[in-house]
Image (cartoon, rainbow, N blue to C red):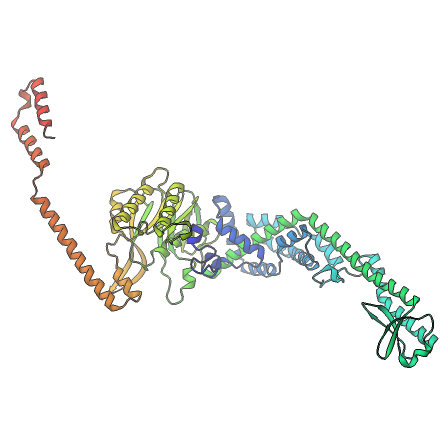
Length: 590
């Protein structure tokens, strides 16, 4: 749910890469790097030391732009080692696959040489794990032609000079034309048939062709094979022997090339562990270069990694929205959460004001830090969280027989069951799918549970329209109110997108409806109805207060009797038994 809601690899609406965090961070040059980047996003690190190692590597890459550019250029010519080796192991690799494997191996020494200019622990580890795969590249470069065919059965895969037997067979083929030409010349001289020629087709093989005008010169040893309109085709024993020699050599060449290729492929399979380690290290280099490129292009900052439970972000930005937003400048916001007095931020404000964007950006900045990437902020101190939970929006799941509200409650139930003190929880509008009083009650109960439960008490951002939750700040430790600043301009409003301390008790729902394009007739009628409802609500409150003041309070009467009797009694003059009887008598009024 969190991966989907935070749009890590695809957007919620269109299921597209553009508009996701992956789209922002993906500057990888290899297929291996793309797969690893996606796995990093879906499975962030929770070990602070490993996170710091990644961040240090990215920092060094950003500080050496020339080397970074050279690495990216080399990586752009690296083939998918993982997929190539899969085909090698399943014996489905083609000559071009082995050539791609070799061409990639030839680039590895340059990558290793460039990595020597960095002293990052992670970059050095990657360099140590990269093998130059010389055994593979030497064999393939010596054995396979520079531009091999797709299929080994097509022939011309193995280079001349690699195998003596293959070279001998090829000499027979190359000399075959001379053999046929010699036979044709001798037959012309023997028979006196000047236009005698030797041809070939797949059905009859080699044949001697004689036109009608020379039929009387055809010798007896010619065996008729085919009669055409103006010529006859013949074969001879000598021609048949030559044919068998030439065609036999062709078949043997195809078979021998397949055998040699299989041996090369099988040798490559013995290098599986080396290739796998190299592929993983190269993919990691690709991802780190991608992070460095994103950091430089988008003005990201290296976050501090902590374990004290504090998330402190100065001028944080949403990494996706700031790039997608073309018409206006993105408004940055600060965030401070801890495990004591700032555990829960209750955020109020109208729809479309930026509450969801703000909460998502906090989650994304935290996640980016934990995958080892720089973050969109002026400063960020991120304490490692063990899990990120989100409850943002909901839709019917008709196939499972669940309504919007049921889906919402299922997500909330999952959060309260599995979140820990070290988790980060994002809650957006809990309790909206039911009646107002039910919704307020659920939202408040969830807030109280998360904030006060000993096993939870986790860092939480809670956006809500229920203004009744503002009172939680005074009633619960660790809860703080925030709101989105709004500027009124006559009957309209302008969202300032700035998160400020303090709650708001206005929803601006009608103003937002107006911004959405509802006709003025509906807007004006909605204002009239709102005024009526507010007036009726005010009258009801006044009436209730009046009834309460007019009613006789039996509690007050009892309190008055007890007080009056206590004033009139001197307990110092009473015996113990009298005092006990007096207290028993007073208890009747309590």
